[in-house]
Length: 158
Length: 69
Image (cartoon, rainbow over all chains, first blue to last red; front, side):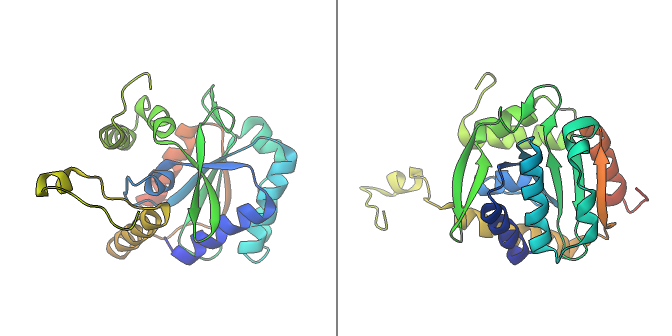
């Protein structure tokens, strides 16, 4: 994961006023629980206006990559709440979600603001990350949940 | 708080190391970079959409294994 690319991306999110919250391993990293990852996972607020902000931010970073037009409101607000974007250059990819399962979405994930190189970054809290990960089927999520629980003294129900 | 004082080594060892989000961010990015040097990947390009998180994770695993999406 390229530092400059990631900072540029976060800066573009802020510049466009994207309503988002980082989840997944990138959010864990910003909370101090560090493991390698290939991607940047984020929830965005599920509105057409916000999805347009996402497209503008990505176009600013990725030189108007035409495939960004394929990130459609009708998908993210409809049958496809999860969209993966592999940029034409760079070594990260993005998993953009409007919802996860029946209950998790931008509005239900508790978040806080971190500062990275002067950029305000919205990041899920350790407790929110723990809740997202503790009941999934992936062994990796269980390890993440255990690491968060140990680091922050979290228990079920928190 | 740039200076912290302790009455004993035990007290110092028990004190949390204070870091900022920026410190964590840099450690995280360095860690990812090391991982990629050890295990480089080739990704497809473009936009892919999924109905469920399980679909998304299965697709990711196929790419990570070097298979087709």
